[in-house]
Length: 502
Image (cartoon, rainbow, N blue to C red; front, side, top):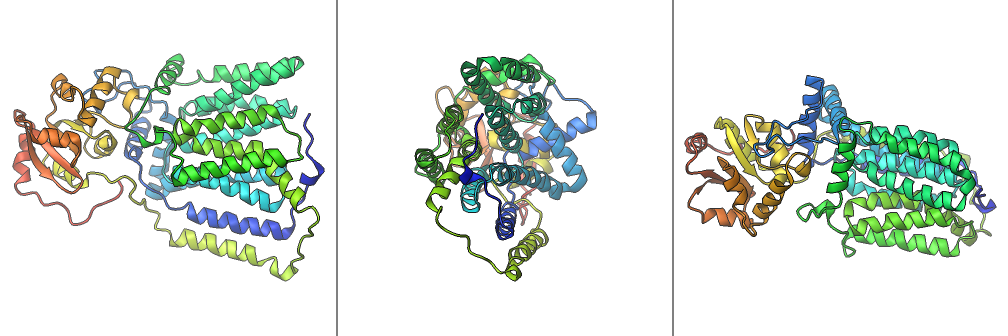
């Protein structure tokens, strides 16, 4: 069983607690700002649909290209949560949902570093800010991934405790996994790390199989506690390994970028800490950290998981090195009268942030608002091919009377061959018209100056009917449904103000 080095067993002074409250308040206020996400409108729409019907829709009603393809909505529980938050408080409710989950994640990490590991104040702040830097860019939007960060942190903590011989916590994993499997597909990452740890731990501790194997096996079975059973696992395992060049989150982390610098800084601190630390090194947990650290190099969306693994598995070594460096230094005595100052500042910062924040979403990815207004006011009813990043925005405002050709759900709704055809259409490559011949849409709304827009401008069967600085709308010259757009376009004037959300 692992023992912490005496240098790490420190109790924080009241001054340190006050300072961490001040740091927490600043992070809280910085985290208030919330942005729209391309999938925000869809997640909310589908969650409200599930609440209204009392069931989970198995066949999507919003697209003309799904061909009755089964809809494996692996994020249904998050969408229902968003629907409840929206009904309770509108935009404020959605922002609060995001903020509560994110700040809970950061607070659990802080509790682990300071309350459980007893790491000194400064190394705790260094590690904690590293987690914040690795997660904040992915946590400013209301998306199911925020629950993955929370549950991944809990999983790592349970693994760390089990590595120390505290196996009872493993019995919480079936509940964690069963909940996670209905919130976001990121549960595969948590189960993967748990599985690797189990194999490695039992290889070195063969007599512990009775304490480890039953809860881990039950956790594996918990992945089937979802509306789709085994089909969910099969689907996720098939899609998680595919290339998604059109989605920034799924591209490899660029080391020459702000996030790349965060990654390199964390790796650098981790390597130096493990080299100089006098705290016992646990090879399995160090190996798990480096396993997770490889993941952002495959897809940048995994950077937050790496940051969490750094805090949970490597934080104690950062603390140990700090204690070795400052062993001869004495704490500065702060007068009692001054110790209340950080608490007062923290309260003022939190209160100021809460009361000054507009509780509205800021624009993330811009949406084709003017074109949507034209389509809606023209009373258009028909099939609309569109940029997949705009699909769920259009579903919220126009569906199901207007059915889209593609949206951000991709493989969860659309057959594989349809998605492959769409990729060719999106990039204007290969037989880019195949998807248009397969099921001709009445109109196409695409990004202006994109390769596809340039190809459509030269096509005899498509007429440009509207364009602004963001989008261009084409109508099928042989479509009866598209005539409604053509007629209304003659008197249409774009609105003076553009709404961000909804």
